[in-house]
Image (tube, rainbow, N blue to C red; front, side, top):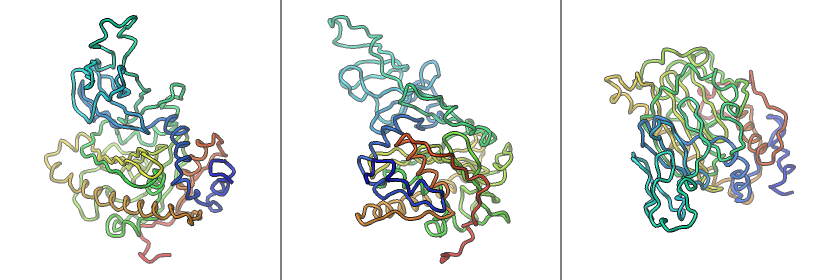
Length: 401
């Protein structure tokens, strides 16, 4: 059977405790990766950054999402736009990196664009016949916002971001993430398939082994179950009930709680995944995000951001305490990168075969099936893990079987 045929993946479609993992070729095949690009990343909403990255008019940053160069720019009107970062003259990249500009000038032949992408000057075109500047603006990509996050969609016929995210608002409203500011940002190029890192982020089964000397040393409250709430829309979440912050290592000084937290948000940490590849950690004093931009079948770019409420940043001890948070993420991100590279090396073996999923990996099962749903355009019956609980893995001994 062929990797590019739906029936090939029937074992991964079974219920969790009967299901196999995705076939190893799904993490190495160039053809399967191209299907993912065409049916997922160029069709759905993708996170590209935070609005607080570009707070002032003229601020911009650039990114590349599945081969498309983008410039995210705050205009003179205060609106944020995602512009295709390719000059309408002969296609040169207009902007690089990040900065602030009064106008956008192509470095090749000097075509000049306003901050909204409109063409303001086109040197050399004075004698061109039937040339109108208004016909050649920088192209725009659909752009919408949720909780301070900037999302883009290449498909002009796509549903709205609100529809795509479904019922996500109620769960995370009390964090007031739109009022947070990203104070630290890291980028890594990782030699692994994008799904490997997403799957790793959405299960705690690896924590006693991969994070044995870091976050596994934390202990939760008496109620130590991880729960998986029912969701509507293209997101899933894991919740861990515990005391204290999960954004610092055990014994380190942290910041006060976010006072507005309500419900389960006030009793631990949420770990949501917004499909296809944006993971958040929402704990009692801050929020962090992990965003993945696939580069090839076997490489990806990982962006990690640490965000705090404005009130926390204004504290006189912020510069003293914040490094405790940054250090935690530097350690655990390296641990997750290292194990993801190890897994990629293993699945690359021509003799590697599909494995089985355990009760600790319901969201790995969900991720795999969401990908198959979109790649093949065949949506199976909804999968629900509401009320699904597993033993707390923080408390497992290192040699647990």
